[in-house]
Amino acid sequence: MYLLVALVLVTASDTTLRPRADAAVHAATDTVRTADTTGRVRADTLRRDTTRVAEPAATPTLAQAEARAQAADTLPVRRRRLVVEYSDAYGTRLTWHRWLSYPIVPLFAAQYYFGEQLMADQRGASDLTKVAHRSIATMTAGIYTANTVTGLMNLWEGRHDPSQRLKKWVHAALFVTADAGFVYGATLAQRAQVEGQDARELHRTVELTSIGISVASWAMMLLWKD
Image (cartoon, helix red, strand yellow):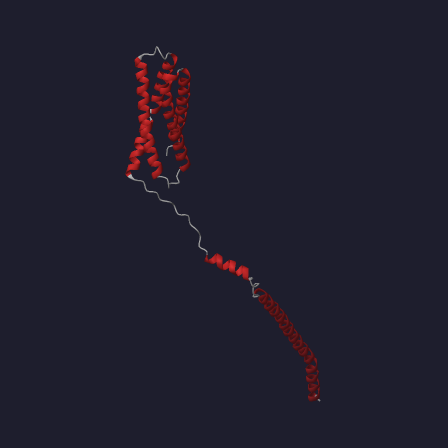
């Protein structure tokens, strides 16, 4: 009797526990399947993203490829500084040119003063006034000649130097123009003794114009000196 009761209880217990165990096994299996499905979805998504990133860029056209090759082969252009060498004589001439230009303005003032004395009283002017005017004109011509020679020689030697080239050429052009004016004015001074007042007036105008051009050229180099 007791054995029969025990067998019934064991059978009932096994029947009760088996559905629970089966349910637990089914739940665990579903969880594994869900996790596996999620992992596969994530793996597929990651694979598609990687595939997108790894897609090759668009193939360049032939013109673009040639342009890139040409740009790679082209070296950057560098400007070279031009080195100009000057001789020792250049420096000597420049020193003389500068120092001889300083007495030019006082000589111009003295020449103008004595010239005005001659213009006011040509016949009654003293011999001292005439000699002084001629002497100052001769000194001015000598200094101007020396400055012209030294200046043109240095201008030719430094013709390849790009530094302040415009200033140098403008200075030289003004200097030579004043030179021509002084030479023309000297010829008019000789004519003034024969032709009278009109020639003297023209001589005065030409000389003053030449003096103005010369002073402008001198002042330009003095103010723009390196």
